[in-house]
Length: 315
Image (cartoon, rainbow, N blue to C red; front, side):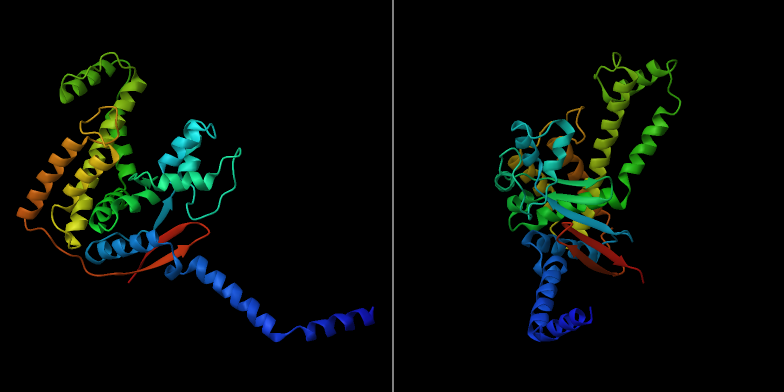
C-alpha cells in the first residue's frame, strides 16, 4: 500500500506545470466566452446598446429585466407542418436558442430549420409573463441598421413589464366580471355591445364573452404600450415620428393586419397609427419631454442560458 501511494505522488510531481497553466487558460477562456458581454453574439450587442440609450434618458424601474433571443415563430410553424409538434407544444421550437447546435428530431435538421427562420424577415417580440423580453433573431435581420425601429419594439415590450400590464389587465377584467352572473349577464352583453357598435354579443356564452373582454383589454394595453414605448424613444433622442415609421415598416414587412380584428390581441395598423400619431402630437405640444436623474446598471450575460440581464444598481 505504501509503494502504491508513493508511486501516485511521484506521478503527480512529474506532471508538467505548463499543462496546469494551459488547462487554466482553457477554463478561463471558456468562462469568458460564456459570460462576458464582449463575446456575445452580435444581436445581443445591438440590443444592449439600444437599452443603454433608453435607460440613459428613462426610468426603467428597479426591476431586473432578462432578455433572450429566440429562433422565432416560423420555426414553430414549420415544426408543426413537419409534425414535430402539435398546438401549444410548438412553442418549444419557437423559443429554441438560435446560437446553439441542436440534435436532429425525426431526421429533421433543427439547425437548418432555425437558419431558414432567420431569413424569413419576421419581426417578433414578447414580454413573456410580464417578466422577460423575448425577441426573435430574425427581428434584427429585418430591422438591419435601423436601431430606432428596434428601439420602438424594445420600448413597447419594456412598457409591458415596467407598468405590470398583465396585472392591470387582470384587475380590470376582474372588476368587469365581479358581479356578473346569469341574471345580469344579458345586461352586461348589451352594455358592451353599445360601446363597440354593431358587433353582436347576444349569442355569446359567458366564457365567450369573457374571452371577448380579455381581447378588448389586451388591445387597450397594446395601445398604451405603444404610447409609453414611444415616450422612451423620443426621450432617448430619436426622431419624434420614429415609432410611426416603424409601425408602417412592420405592416409592410411582416404582413401585419391593417384593420382591427375584434378577435385579436392587437389593434390593426390603421387604428394603432392614428392613435399613436394623436398621442405623439399631444406629447410634443405639452412640452413634457423630460429626462430622469441618471442611475447605474450592469449587464449579466449567460451564453448557456441564452440570457442577457439588465440589472439596475440601487443607489
